[in-house]
Figure 1 (cartoon, rainbow, N blue to C red):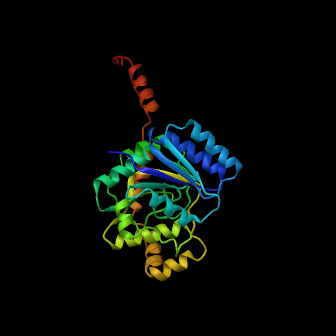
Figure 2 (cartoon, rainbow, N blue to C red):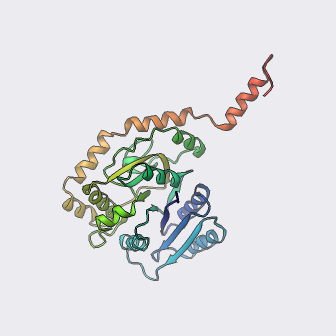
Figure 3 (cartoon, rainbow, N blue to C red):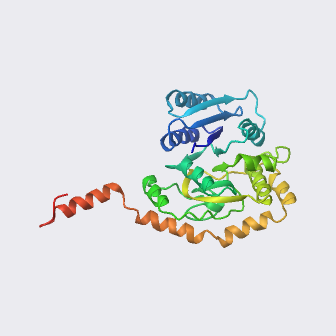
Length: 287
């Protein structure tokens, strides 16, 4: 199974972009297609970061830059339309993808053809924030321990109110059937993604959590001016549904299990040390 295309809209924070590209390089298989699309946002240092990364990356990367910005949602809509019916993973420019993130998202789609969007856990992911919902938590201290814990998670793919913008895999056929992004009503990717998620859900598709993937982020996504009012008018029950989800936290047990698995994860070096210690006991067989 081929991996999805990664779309990475370039932002103005060159330090965050540098960290994002470094994590992307470390966590994504060589040859994966990646499109860095710049809506006239990056400055000289940001462009230098991109040029250096393009010269050294193992990924199949392309970079485009618009001479004048057209806005976040309009720019992303152009990117999505250029990908046709392909499944695409949209990654925030200040995201920090964890080990295996893209493979896990792709396998999530393969398990259930009714899934339209798959969103990984995040430290700053609103409904999928970990370890506390609705908060901007610190990034995991030990990414390797997190990876071991995620590998042991049960794959329940619980329903979410909508996808979240730190990282999301979008099924191309579902996006096309729902009509794509509404760039005339929403300026931000945050609000346009919520609206798209709700329209796809209304057509019978699912927006789910990918239980065994994690993508960190420096901070939560933000709606544009007036976007929340448009969402509230178009989807009158949306705000109450989101608030109810955050207050009731139906993912609480799932979130607690991930915390437990992180705490119990035995690192390979710790296992080696344990074996060495056992081997040095009197009467122990050599390892």
